[in-house]
Length: 189
Figure (tube, rainbow, N blue to C red):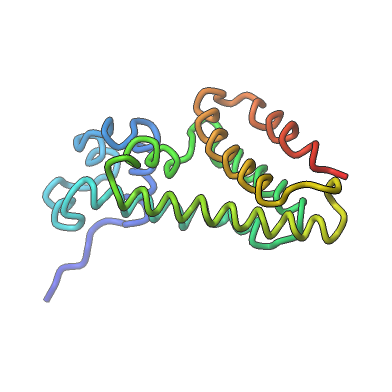
């Protein structure tokens, strides 16, 4: 009869998320991952096979538990209020830590097709969601007349990436909040 796992996978993935956010993929050493996740080395390799396979699981967990709830604001598609709610939630998520997915894309995106595919899907999803919200905002006259929906959505998507990097440098300051207001203010009618 197989033995029941003696670890909580959610806990392991949450702890590993913190390690990868702090050190990146290459900077995260196995000794710290093992220590912070309360996993043993043998069990780790039996469960995940490799550090890279584990990292993919951590990225998947991060998307499901951290990014998807933030993106849900855009999927509510209430126009400009959805975009504002997204940026407010996103800046709270990344403030002082950055975004694990954006960090993974910048660190591994050139060499790792899986990370590149996951990143491309995420950024495409954001841009499509921004387009939908901007179209709704135009329909409800929430934004200034004459905006180019596609280029504005691309700009917003690009800012998401920039915010993820700036969040690390800004620390706990209100820089991201100020940047959100500067970004979204000109869209208001």
